[in-house]
Image (cartoon, rainbow, N blue to C red; front, side):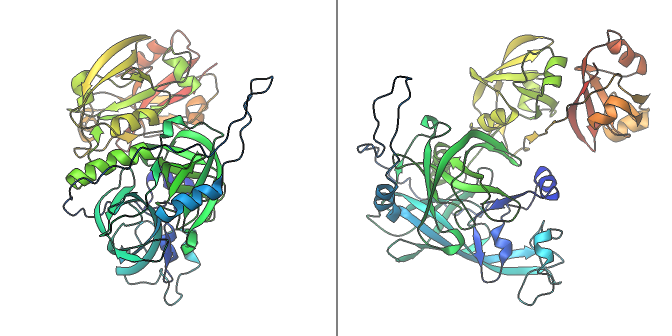
Length: 510
């Protein structure tokens, strides 16, 4: 599963004792490869599209009994033995060899201060010695065959920086694999081996699963071949820091380093996801595993097979989640939607008329409950697609149509706001920006926050931040702020800029 190179939010979690860990286990005395950093592999020219997996549906593995007097349908345990026997031969081990560019400390980028590696510093043969340059590595992951002529799905982080990829079948035959392409944004990679009449998995529909449904994972944790673990779906549509495009399936099936790229089966033996990440404080499984929905992976696969790479759409906004305080400050009853903190100049969003302070509540008629839902739906669309948005602005709803751009132009960013602040007054000491400060910061308005206490300090506002708007209304003077506060609102949303980034900070005043 996955870990650094850490993005800012992931780094904050690591600092708090929580790491996002990749399951691609490393060997040859390189524990650094138990943790992965996403990086797109070079994509050779694509071959012709492979035949799709047959959609035949055998008899259900899970027998269903009649419902009882309370309407509850008792379901027998899935026949995991049957699933492993039928589809285990389609699960493969993936071994990779290559080199990583090391830091000055001889560690992969982003790991210099990782406490895990402090223990290994100075030990011969271990990372952490001074030098830099290229560091050789060997790693292991998992994958599964989706077409009988040798098309295989795995994680992009499994084959990251790999110069040689070997696939090992259950019957111990080994093949040199070609990486058709790897998409770092979704962590999906497609391999091909020169083989015929291979056993294949049966693909399912992740939209049909519900929380509580049984699941089975097969892979090679720590290099132990053909290991099966079971659990249940514990959440759906999970959005993780640094993974804006993927609505992960969360399970409690035990997944460890080496399981990366292996299949997640439902109780009927259909593959519904690719095991990709775990949350861990130790580097090993601690009860939370995350899988990429198979429909997401197949869409990426189709693009890679056809073009050698995947393309993702871009809206051009910086967004964040709402909480109850922010929702009330914008006149919403529920904290549903994606709050627009910033709109990139010249972006598709700017051309469509989206503004900072808008709340996007629907995409193509489907509700947006959190910012991650919007990011996933936009990111998995194609550049040039037109989407219909329902936007909440000035306490009323309106419809907009946006023609999406390409994420290659500039990546969409996601901010987060998790503060629930309490207090009586704002607690801000403000002054207008002078012309040179405006030019230097590339702003056309705003107030410098020179001092902060009370509710604003409690909410995380800092001296040096620039206040741009209050409840979506741009401010250019202290009097304008006072005018917006004269009705003594119970909740206020401040739009601030800090280090070139914008976000709304909710403040609860009463």
